[in-house]
Image 1 (tube, rainbow, N blue to C red):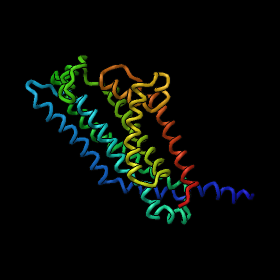
Image 2: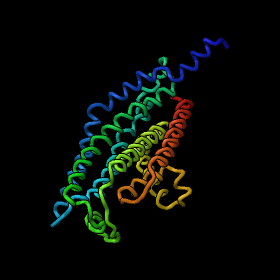
Image 3: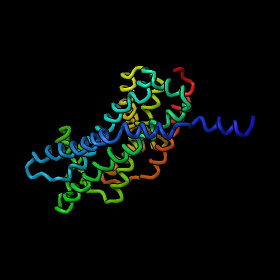
Length: 277
């Protein structure tokens, strides 16, 4: 095979990825990003109002209420937003129309993920996380950072089984926490892309997308440590530990999850490349 033809064929697999990524980026910005940022702030306000109803309440219990609700809202919002990222375009024929042009199939799949990265890091994690830090830092300055977890659990689930005291994480640990949450959201995006390449019905994609983080949580909490640390469930475990003011690794679980993200995207590319459109 001539060298020039070989170069053309190797480039064609990712041909068009720049334009497709820009198109996906514009789908997220500005309105979806603003909605995600507003939802994070809304969760913060809601958690504050709930705790303010308690007499002599402290602001610091937001560490539990805010982050638990925030991560749940982010997961559900990401699943709902990305459920049709691939499957709807296949059903509507948009994918076949694009692939008929000089666009590689891997480029179509990878652009879905690349276009979502800025939205996840800025809208989902960055803006709400920065605002939450300011609010919680003010609580620390006022001496309101020590509280019993039992009080918080009573508000959330009427349980007083935990009685340890929590503190606002240091800035470095807080940034690590945001990095863990951002990595988790990117994994959810990758999983939704993979599901869209496999499952035709968007309802099924939505259900499986919601079940995936729940499964990761169970793996992280119930599986032996040696097994859990080989899965993205390690990210969830570290998130819980940091919120609970317990020692927790950040870089290692992120690296493990990044590997899983690339494996997931590789599987999506392989399946989409073989799928009849």
